Image (cartoon, rainbow, N blue to C red; front, side, top):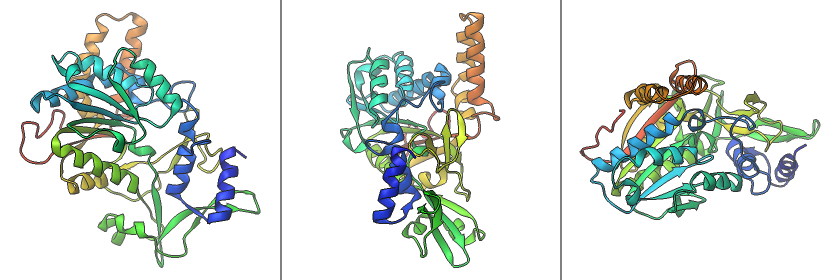
Length: 363
């Protein structure tokens, strides 16, 4: 039994069953035993690999997108350049290198990394050592107000979700209970209705079949609304993640360990937990908070439209045979429909109202 499982056993005994959201928050973010608090999960030696680690082209295109949005918005100064869940800092390092080609951009922005993991903050510091104007925060709320350029790559998928199951007597919340006989956690259902049912899309709430599982993420909706609110002073936010284009039913909660799927209730605190992002829901949340919503489009379409293949070919002209193989395979993995190309979606938020950046590049 992991230390976190011991903690959960005690908590359930004292407070009762946990929602899936509470379970995820503990498994990923417990200050002493949480998955993201205790390790660097990225890379071959970790549990998963994200797009910036696969190809530099990913971060470079995002950097050029952000710089172009800044230019279209009037090239203002005092801009907060924010990344949510910045991994090892690879994406920010790549995007700053590319965006530096836009005259004046680096002088106009201050970099803000929203990261709770001490291990990852250390890696980000190394990656961003050449950039003196970098600050770290535990949440977006800590980032000073001001004009905003924001990117969140594979951030929302790790935020806690609630799961609801439609039964003959209505929607019931899926819970984590403690099976005393087996001395291990197990899934159960709430005896009554859950207040988060009201967050379900109406077509799901009223039309789903008996036995259907639906997921809602108040945490994702909250951070989306905060991003949208801040964009009323400009400039843009870019969200990249895997998930549904429109709200849909389905149990997407999954654990990943050593680059493979793992049981959700085994080795708690030692495996990553994620769920598919409901882009329909976050789009509604952003629009409701006053932002203009663009997309989602597939990662494949977004990257190709921004010139991924041209950048790949430019890199190949000065690559060794070994480097060329890595460059080709990396870009292909990002855009191939059988890999990340269509499962991953891209959505942008801008200030509402007609502007020169409606629609933004790539949309």
